[in-house]
Image 1: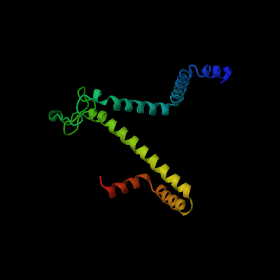
Image 2 (image 1 turned 60 degrees about the vertical axis):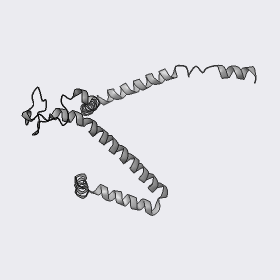
Image 3 (image 1 turned 30 degrees about the vertical axis):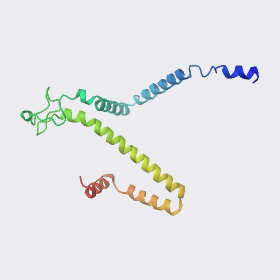
Image 4 (image 1 turned 135 degrees about the vertical axis):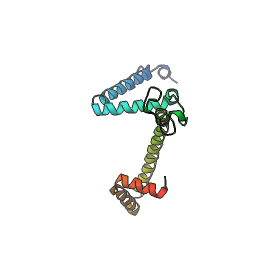
Length: 165
């Protein structure tokens, strides 16, 4: 191998030095710009703040909740909001604040899994329909057009009635 080629293979590219640091700085800048844009509008700022609070409740729920989700204090049944029970208690004496905080994790997991399932199933059906085309594409499109023509609440009640609670 000639000397010039050997020396070129051992040298480092100046653009690669510190590129991971530059990439991290660029990503941090993009993230801060996106957050700044998000908080520029009042409605998106309120929605983002509620989501972040809900996410923090889901992550730190067991540390925040003063009582267990199903812990019953019969003497405190049907109490209004107070210093001991921030959201009050239900008719069985369970702390509503604890139930909301501890249920946040389940709600976020269910929403995430439902969204993932919808994306995977929709993408698969769309790819198969688009790839084969013809009568299959027409049948799939008419089926989804008929689903879109139904109001969402009516469709939810129909599913609930047929599958049960």
